[in-house]
Length: 123
Image (tube, rainbow, N blue to C red; front, side, top):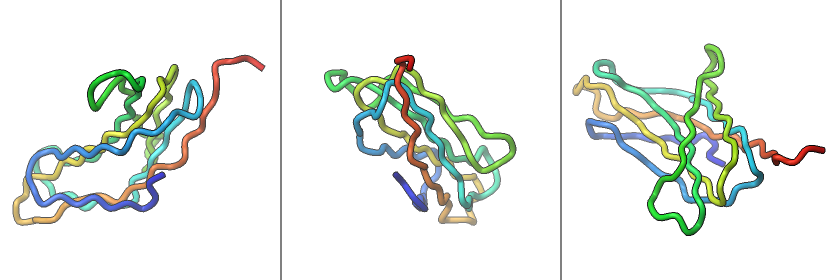
């Protein structure tokens, strides 16, 4: 997965990055990411978000069914419980810099942990 990855933007406005598609490892999954460090300027609505997308190979487009992450308590960890995944999975990573233009390089250091896969079948 993505371990200690740094994303930096020199522009204003939200920037979107997509990971490559990868095959699902089960019918369902728990995905988790951690924000290790943020260096975003103040002003506006600075932030960092990750969205999970899933689709079948024959489905058109760069996105599909989406799942959002929620923060785990007041920690730097975020999780997404994804059910009934299709054949392929990918992440959309969005970084929104602050509007204080005296700070040029803004970004985040994050890591996406390996997912926990599980099937719908009962044991």
